[in-house]
Image (tube, rainbow, N blue to C red; front, side, top):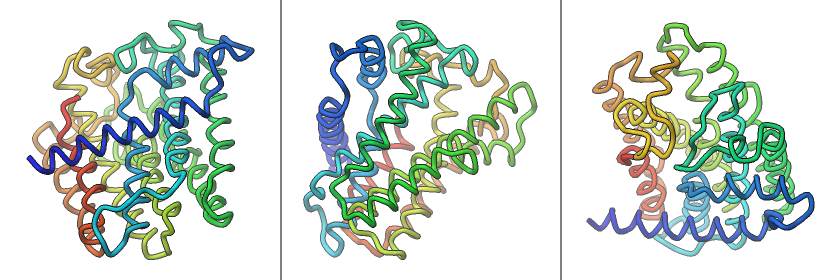
Length: 304
């Protein structure tokens, strides 16, 4: 029960801090040209859980308060979380387009292109990516840390082992029988890279050294893969109302998913194992890692 209460408080606080930062950073819906700004806000404020910003903030808290439990967040870290959420939202807007996943429901609401048309949706995604890097460049962290964060994030969303590359592999693999190798490559890049960099960049913002970065990379790599495995499981076992997006599309499209290769029971077992291994990477931080662990545990226990 204590863990449940703790993670609920962490998530609620993280959502509030992230939304406050996003509200401040995104142009208002009345700012000219208003159509694109309304489209950006439509998708950004559609009710996301802000898991990636929360992971970034909790990693920053852990490093900032090493040697003790709890502690305050480093000042300004919510802007890092907001930038990561902008990048995540941009990827969702583009993923939902007819040329890609062709989905009309996201976070329980009509997708961006359904409301604003394809042209504005494409440009809204582009604009969110641009604003994310503008935000990263203005972080309150020391200049060397800011440069490292920009490098880490740009690598994570790129074409080589990054989010865009993973999306390409996913598209090109549709209709083909997935293998363990193909599903692993897609998941680690398409979804896992942004989750991993959320953790690592948060740590860098909090003052991580090289050893910290290595541990956080291991934690983020395994935690990110566990997250996507659970997402695959939920696509098979939950309905659209529970998910907030169209359920069953992965199966219908013959997508490369973990259950398609390993089955539901083995997929769940592997996700649990990955989280256990991810936790082991944080052992040197003791109680300071409790918040980050609580969020990671939530990622594999969630039902939507």
